[in-house]
Length: 191
Image (cartoon, rainbow, N blue to C red; front, side, top):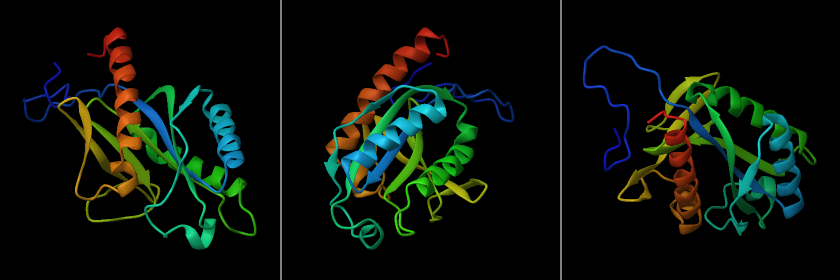
């Protein structure tokens, strides 16, 4: 049953496991130019045999963290897929996106940064190689964090959410993706 927070499948009986419904695969991409974005989009579509929808492309102005490696004119785009996956596969997906990043190196520096994530009805989860107090180790040197949570018809940031994921650009895109995802898993009778 769907609650106001977007949580489903809550089992109040202690010690009883249940299958999690499939999650919607997403990718968050930073790139040095629009050509790199288009190349990576095509690569992700080929690797995962999926159709990708894109947010608008916007300048990435939130931190200088990537500037030494990628320059100052970094672009941000979010990709949504039509692919429903097991949430437990996100570490393997992150390892694959790391390998894809390496295909686009120039002078041993990244031209793209690809962070896979997934949507559930309750949250947006991001996979990363970086540990932090709020992140959970999920295996193979990969961590996951709940980056956004769904409440009152929209996604909301946590105190640790990166500034670009707090933006209307990100929240609007993921909220729209969630609407389509909700309709799809309802049609497939997961809820």
